[in-house]
Length: 104
Image 1 (spheres, rainbow, N blue to C red):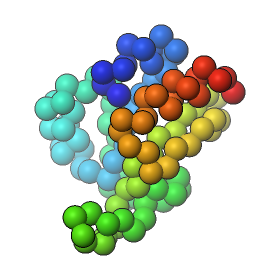
Image 2 (cartoon, one colour):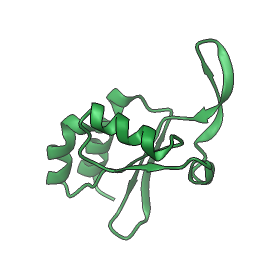
Image 3 (cartoon, helix red, strand yellow):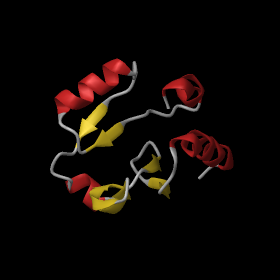
Image 4 (cartoon, rainbow, N blue to C red):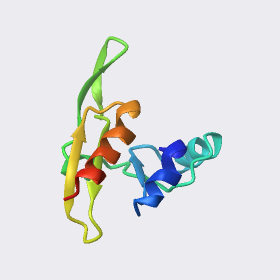
């Protein structure tokens, strides 16, 4: 996302990241990676649960609960236009740009 931010801003897209990490952890992550967009903390998982992205996942052979990497596109009125579940970071920007070109 960071590397595509200029292109996304040309389409009037505002980027926000959200994770279950504590704000301090997110701040260090954002600083280390020079992220120019806000990261929001969902440490109680309420937002993740509402969007259906908090669930069982397997990491390094172990099963536990966590975020299912997802991306969402909303219009300026807050209506959900597209949702991509189990999307890889490499796929996120191309899928987003494709949706923007297609229109609502």
